[in-house]
Length: 152
Length: 105
Image 1 (cartoon, each protein chain N blue to C red):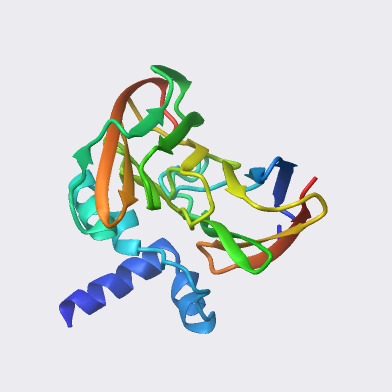
Image 2 (cartoon, helix red, strand yellow):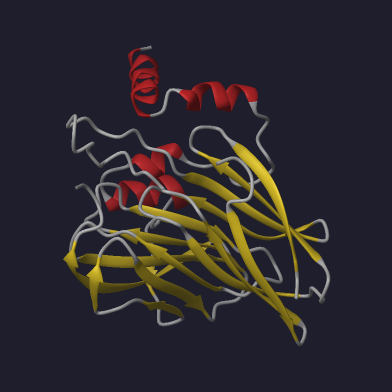
């Protein structure tokens, strides 16, 4: 009960409308947005909430990111993998207030090669986690940030 | 800010389609403070994005607040021909949702 109340209070504080929306709108068939994973404040929690495990480093996952990002508000990142049967790819920034950046679902027929742009509060390790055949693989890289992209 | 926030460039080349997608959205993280009042600006960001082609899902994303303002995504999928239509559905953290379409060039 107390857990329940806490999450309700938190939801009101953060978005209010969220509750109404989740009741009113039938979810489209896709992996649901995991609010626990996206709100987790450390990377290990976010990973286990989202993917249910810890990944192992793999050379078959490529994370392309700049060595130094002048502007942390826009950091271009590309995740690529040569693994077969890739199901999803997620990006984590370890030292962000909430490490989980995004999760991409890769249906059959779509290349395991996604580019996006993300925000970084400060210099941090960026980790890409690829889920293939039910197993987790990762690649990490440190990106130095000269101007943060969070807060203000 | 209701409809038409997505800019899509989809190009068929050979047997695959390259898609570049940009959403015009502030992606308010909920961490920023209003400079005048010192109060936190509530979070408002795109949470989900799904791209369909010919009734089949070709790309889907769950997004957090650390995705940059005006989010950009690039991906390739096999299949798709010039003139085909892509259907994009997005959901904002406020619950707002819309579906937009774009043609493959």
